[in-house]
Structures are given as C-alpha cells and as structure tokens.
Image (cartoon, rainbow, N blue to C red; front, top):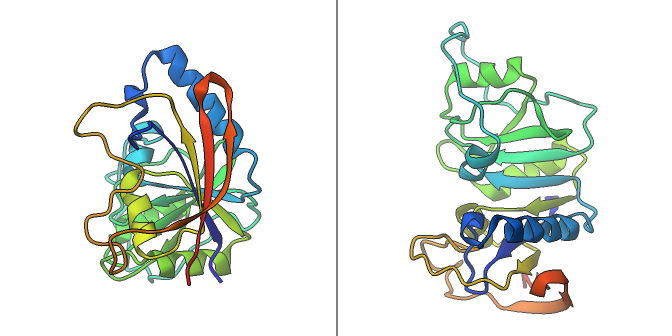
Length: 233
C-alpha cells in the first residue's frame, strides 16, 4: 500500500548533484527553474528529502532547552494537521533538525524517525504540530515508513529529491518506481561531490539496476530531461 515513488533529480553529465558546482549563478538559476518546471508536471502529493538537504536549505536552530522535560511518549505515529493535502517528508531518524513551522511553502511536514529518539524531541515536534512516523527501532526501514505514510496520509505519489544517500538507500530497498533526471550540460570535476545514487553495498544482492526507457525531452540551455521506469519483477 505504499505510495508510488519518482526519484526526480538534476545532475551533471557525470552524475554529480551539488548545485554550487554547476557554473555561474545565472546558469544555476536557469537549471533550477527547468528542474522545478519538470517537477511541477507530476501529479504528486508529497516530496521527500534527507536531513542534509534540509539542513542546507531549510533548517532552523534546534533548541530543546526551552522545552520542559517530557514524560515517556508512546512510539506511535502523530498527525499534526489532519486537513493537510500536500506534504514534505523529511528523513531525520535521530532528531537533529530544527523547525520554525510545521510546513514548507504550504506543504505540511512529516518526519521519519526511529524509536530510539528522545522524548524531548517528540514533544518538540508535537508542540509545533509536525507529523511523524516511526520506521524501526534504531535503524530506518523505508518500506515500513512508506507503508505507514500511505496508510495515514492522502499521499499516492512522492517525489524523492535527494540527496544521494537517501536515493541510494531507497533504491537498495527496491522502492523507487520511476527515475526522472534533468541532465545538465556540465561536468563536475570535483572528487568529493555526491552522485544521484550513493550506494555503500551492492544493490539488493546485485551490482546494477536495469531501467526501462520512457522518454527524453530537449529543454532550453542544452538541458535534457530523461525518464525511466524500474521493473520490480
């Protein structure tokens, strides 16, 4: 019962995804606009990112000192806004992100946690009406997380948008259904930049993942938009 997952990313032709390495600022703005244009063509109800991506773009200072010590809180999912219809899903299993609101650009926040999270952090999320689900005791199972999200929220399609480690982990669990790549006319020659899929161990007992071609579209500024599906059989 999990939602359909589209991994939507922009990358250089050698697969690197750090936007600061995409050339001049005006070029980066053009590429970002094309990326968002492609994103908006999907009929999704949620987008999903990892903690490091959120830290870079949206994070607020986390202050638990001002919150009174919390009693033991049951490790059950919490729905902060039962009327929400669009969502951002944040992987933050250890509770390191700070929030100034329970939404980003109108999208209600759902946090994926593990059960070893502190009671104080759970109370912090509850006080801000931020939704959360648990995906394991001390290690995240994305399969569990997505099944719970599919049960509790009106989400049929999720756009998975990085970084490379969460993309790789989701691919490793065979949870990605479609891949959408906005391919930029750039080579990122830095050795440390992450790629679209960072996979530390072999991919579900094999070293590669075959894809089925869907389409290619030429966009402005030499950009290509590639779409593939994944066969789970």
